[in-house]
Length: 208
Image (tube, rainbow, N blue to C red; front, side, top):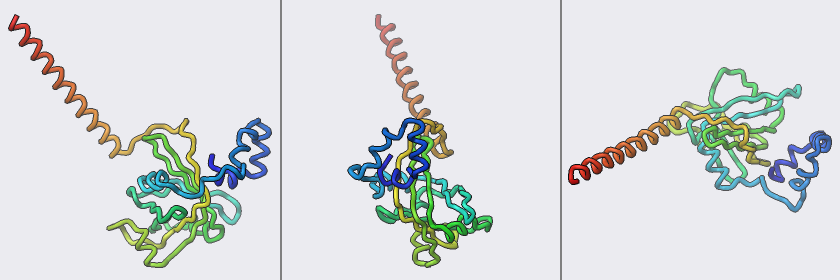
């Protein structure tokens, strides 16, 4: 786990549980001031986030309840503006505005993006800003997409690559079709090789 992420996630209550179950010493090293990192997005994180077609977003209500919502779109709908800033265009949905209301009250936000096909997931902590500036919205909207109501700009405070151990492998329709196409091409190549080998064997037999 990155230092920046641990500084936020490892609250006193969490550290108490770690001590209770014997993992406190193992995680103490990530809290060391000498171990920095996990706040500045690199090319690896930027590539992963811009390629994702959805992520889970958590906010907190005025009464302290967490609220998790899925945000999806074509790859590229989540914009990496710079090494500390993400953003996406917010479109009209069912008009419940739960996430929006939560963020007006508490701008803290948590995201987790999962690539099921490659068993990778990235989680982030940040602070969100709601904007209705048309220039910002235009920057965040997907080309040729519908009109967005607002933009959500997220200042990244910390990120961490999560353990891939229990991520099930799932494919989108596009990923499935690509894999089927690859396998069909491989089968065709093998069939050609087998047919050529059989033809050569037959020719050798006729010459004997």
